[in-house]
Length: 479
Image (tube, rainbow, N blue to C red; front, side, top):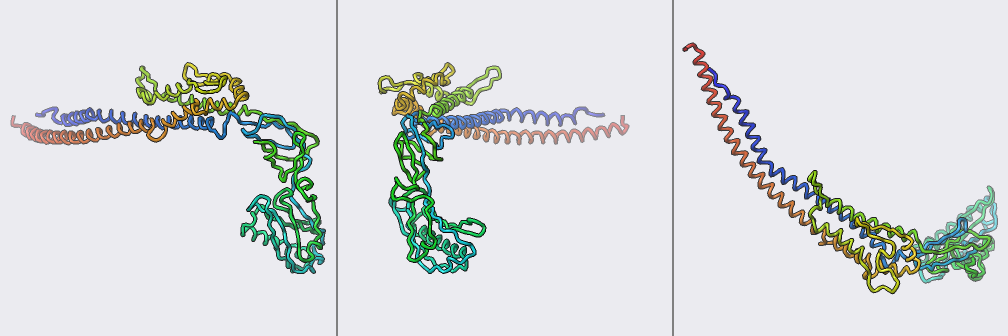
């Protein structure tokens, strides 16, 4: 005789045990899902911090009192004019003419030509060559004397010139080491191969202009023997020296020791490139492109914050999905606070000066986005009164200043972002603690159920043994 169902009960009990444990794990799984949501919310806060930092950078640009972007200037120079011009905000909007008669050059001295393998110079006696050069170490236009000990021992003209070159280079290097001159002040020496058989000795100043001229003196026959020739007439002053540039700016002839001229027009640097045949006009104007670029960067950053908070605050009732900031009034209020600043006005400005963004062509649309709807109004304000436009954005009560203060309070230490991250960290800690308690409880419950299951298995084994004995008994033919 067989008792059916006893062996199948073990499998049923195991399945029931697994199902019960799975049901008791559901609260833990829900907490784990909640924790993932909070972690995602923290990541969104980090992204928001990046968006706000970009806005802060854009605001910092348009509120910087030093750069003053609304007074930026640009120079308009014809192509192939022979010069370049750069203008800063200190330059006045104006038109000028420039004619370049001469470029500044270094003081270059070239010796007579000597046969490289000849012996004309081998009889030179040991002597001291004194080179007076300009020094930029001390006061302006300071000059120092550097002594080079010349003691040629070469057997040919080239070798003698190499000895002289080495002595001058050594003297210049020692003067640099002693901080009497800089490396750029040092005279430069070279041997020039005029032909395949003839050489010349070349000596030139470290920089251009009359003030950087060389003065040479020797206590022997070196200078008479080399018989240096001035490539450009050194002259006796800034006005008659061919080492200085000569140019005519707005009808006035000027002389400078450099081809980079930054003191002829305020806030303007002129780079002289080549001699010109006639006066060329150039203009300095308001840098419309830079102004628009800076304002558009501010608008884009502002709109980026608005769009990000809006997207992360959405709730989809159909899918029951919620953005990271849904229901978070502290974060969502950032969007409205910034809008309020954008719609604000600035008090205390001069009569006729723009006091709101809308007066310079920047509008806040229905979606809460800023738009530069009238760039001409913005550029006209910059042209008419750049200081007033700067005051609108960067004054003590300027719209950009107020908005920047608000943004820095949000992203700064102990600001809104920090506080919201702390709230989420605390929530994660509470969730972790609850998960840990539930895991402990579930572990104890699992031990209880497995203990009960063990007792059931032992009972089943006893029943199976009894069934086997009965089967053997009845199968033995007693009945």
